[in-house]
Amino acid sequence: MAPSYKSSEYIDDSDSELSAEEREYEPPKNFQKVTPESKEFSSNLKGKEVWLIKTPKGFPLTDLKKLPISFSGKSAESFKVNNLSYQVTEDLGASASDTNNKHTIFSSKKRSFRPLGEKISRFYSIHEVVDIPEIQLDKVVVPRQNVPKIKKLRMRHFPTGYGADDYQFDKEEEEEEEEESENDDVEAGKVLKKAKVEEKEEKEAKHKKDKKEKKDKKDKKDKKDKKDKKDKKKSKKEKA
Image (spheres, rainbow, N blue to C red):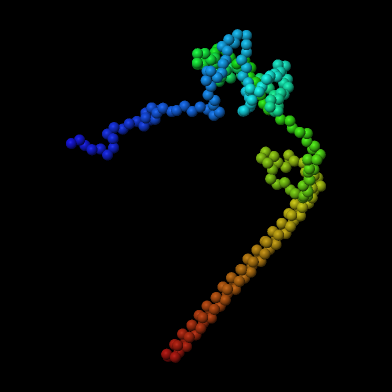
């Protein structure tokens, strides 16, 4: 009889099972499927340039009749589409070699798309222009009220890398601070002297108390010894 196993006799590699699983392709966000019949791009681009124009999300391309572009380097005039103002700017910082690695031009042919060898030569961006109304600053801005300055403040903690020499202080305030610091030192000296005197008096009082207690104990012991001797002599006489 064949031996029974609680688990499988053979161990499969879990990594190989995961690698064999097929992952379904997920298109990126805002992906729009395009069929060969929906867009036609001419494969004859001789003597022509290919421009890449980026538009805002939801831009109405079908309502765009013309596109004002400035070749002088200055900003082009704004144009309106559906009562909204837009402006075209050329992205001069974009590198054609780097950007062409991300984009490929396809041509529709026989119900399929085929890549062309043409490269993108210019890059433009369309952005919305918002008219900011004129602001009357005199009516909008409220005058700032200065915080009342407190005198005799002393800066004790400085930022890292800075010290008292890096700041300018008022001479009158410095003199007042020096005078106050001297007074504080005098007061501190008085307090320290008083504390030392009190400590000395406390030690002397304790010493006198200990001395008196020792003397009282000694006197008490001496009296007891005298009494014991007297009692012994008395008892000897009575026996005799």
